[in-house]
Image (cartoon, rainbow, N blue to C red; front, top):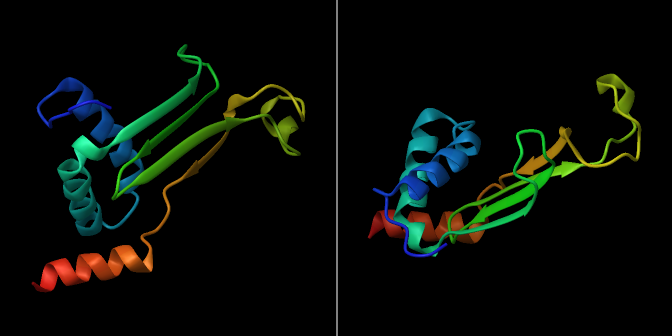
Length: 117
């Protein structure tokens, strides 16, 4: 991503994607995290693979020094029949893996040190 600033449409859309994941935390934690993500927009990168149609399978990753969000559409697994698919079929939005890892001890220590100085 090149030179995003919080006033641009692309930056606001990117923040909205991250907020979907971050907002699963308690409200005060989510607000703090989103402020941190906003401060690092210039160091934020997006990776996309796959289609762009509403029903396309895709992979997207948003990462910066303070956040890592991944969404990956997978091929149907053993429970494929539950949603009318066949196990081992093509990737679909009906079988999605997503991740937003918790902060590492290093990140927590850095944040603590920053807040006490």
